[in-house]
Image 1 (cartoon, rainbow, N blue to C red):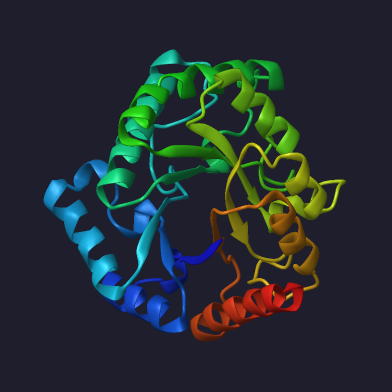
Image 2 (tube, rainbow, N blue to C red; image 1 turned 45 degrees about the vertical axis):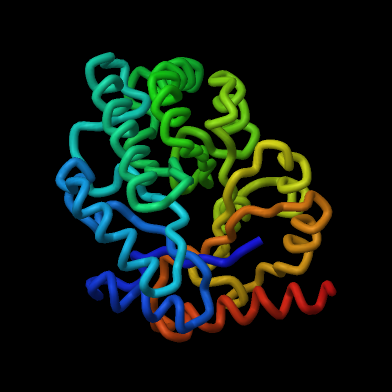
Length: 273
């Protein structure tokens, strides 16, 4: 298990500054939001993508992958009844997979609630069909690039589609590819009936990636969520993927959020030893 941090926390900092800070704070990896790199990843040519990878490597970091995949974009929608829009969305996800591989990453976290919410006249069953249709068209490029698309369930307050780990697993099993797996997020799991550790154990075989945060939208250790059971569950399932700090409330400040989140998680691991 290795710790990473999501780079949108650094706001408008130059990439190099954010990467250097993350490395100095003790992180091994960085997870990138595409909108911090360009309006659309199609705007990034091979040279630009290579430069991003090199900047991370110079800082001593590994690029984990990309998340917030469709944020701040227009024209994409995973569950649209319009086949043309779904095809366009699948095409862009393919380009995100290529970009992810080009910058050195291996994970695409598919959250983007505003591009998957149920549209008028579209029920859950239809949305599941539409999403499966789109993602099936991404699998060949995932296989070519070696990238895993990790489907992220979100709490009911954040989305009307894929509101639980069970929902996400249903979609993943519809696709039936080892390149399409599960992402779990502490804040999102806080809205489920079962505790996070139980959800982790239940989905051990599909879990590909993990976001560490708190129900209060800040970092791990900044709220009431106890991460000890979470790390106990990781040990039981022999989880060897990344744990990325993802924060939505930046009020404690970048320095505190980054450093204290990591220290809290490292202390949890020490206490389990």
